[in-house]
Image (spheres, rainbow, N blue to C red):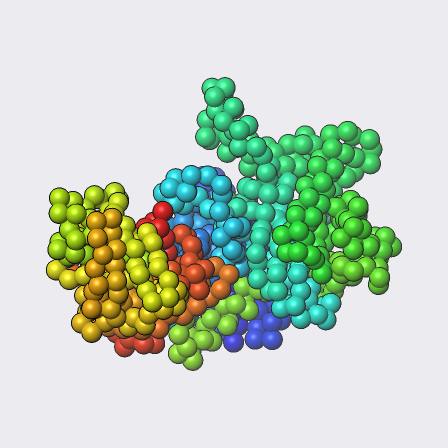
Length: 600
Ligand code: ADP
């Protein structure tokens, strides 16, 4: 059985076929592809030739490289309609890549309709970076509205390079703090901490970070504002400037090809020398930054056309890193020749505290491996994350109370009425300015927010930590089920009252409109478990109650203890875990999260 790998870009298409021993059977590359209707070879022509070339093979699966899977996909995916839609949804974020991948998937699905097609994403390896690394320091409402966060790219290469670097160094990946430097036409660095990417230099788009062949990498955003204000630049021409006329090409004025620049530099060309220096300086800065971010570095891996081949660039990047414990053996660096996958070169000295290794990247092989793994899991009927359902926001509820009119008047005075200050996500619900104090046998908790409107029963919702603080024992209950719950004394500015029941620890639940329930295939009062991942600590919440009502808006509610345990953030994500609910079948859903702002 064999696997076909397709790597389709805006003007090129690479393909490869591997057998089940990972032996490369055929490979090829079509370049300078043109848009439909233009003179020359189009993507469709190229795909036809791939089909011709590969027709003889009995394929077990087809693996497609997809550049942008956003934060949705932490794993390669068996391609179904939902996955296709998600890839389509990321077209605006990756206009040079996702449309071509999508077209290739659709075309090849018609030729191999009965074999699984798998999408392997460049973003997946970075999809679980901590929030501090994915967040830009801009207005978070704007960031959410426009999806402005860091994704990272080249993940297939970084993951592969990290894996084989560890293998060659004979050190366990999950004990290593590695920096992987993918230096090719596109270039990026990644901090791979114990096997996971925790930082990477490309961000919301593949433009951020290192100097590249013709891309600028980091530029002060103020420069772009000034160019726009000058009236001489539009979004289009800025795009052209930063993506096509910058980087090594823009700096040198010669080429985006480092070989030509190195030749010119040797001949004394000043711009060529500057290009090399800027490239190396930026790369060195990132190594230092990532060592600091990880609290140290055990190994550095170089890969990509420049990383694999340019000894002088490697030497420049690595100079003056002795303070980090990096000691380079100049002869080994100079002699390093990496021509095949099973070759590598350690270019650090035996006494270097940091191992430095040069490895050959092989994205196609990585895609083949991952595709085979996912297709195999599918065959065995394992649950595969099919993460393309609409996101379920998670709201973290701080301690709060719902009061009856009588209780409210007793605490706040006969003439008082609740003062709404902020609408909550569930229609008709709002946070009020009024706050009460809980008086427990051990301690008091002040500032417990009233939520409106007033209700027919008093209900105070606290977390397990609050229970310990108060010295009370509150049962876990669904909202509204306060009969025989815990007693508590409550106090407001106008009075104090002992409730014989009403104190609960709210049971975690998901509000759904019936339309949402249909999409997720669940019914009112079903129980599911929810896997929360995307932050630094994955967690599965069991016993999550589904509540379906016409007036509900899709949202999962948990308390602060639960939110903290899962390190819930605004844009971290989770999945509804399928096994618990028959109707959910094999699907595993994605959950995006959101903090309720009650505690503010
Ligand atoms: P892509 O990102 O398009 O896959 P590559 O990983 O092939 O690009 O890297 C292309 C870059 O590698 C070019 O800048 C090229 O000049 C550089 N490169 C390839 N071989 C050498 C070499 N022997 N010396 C210096 N640079 C090299």
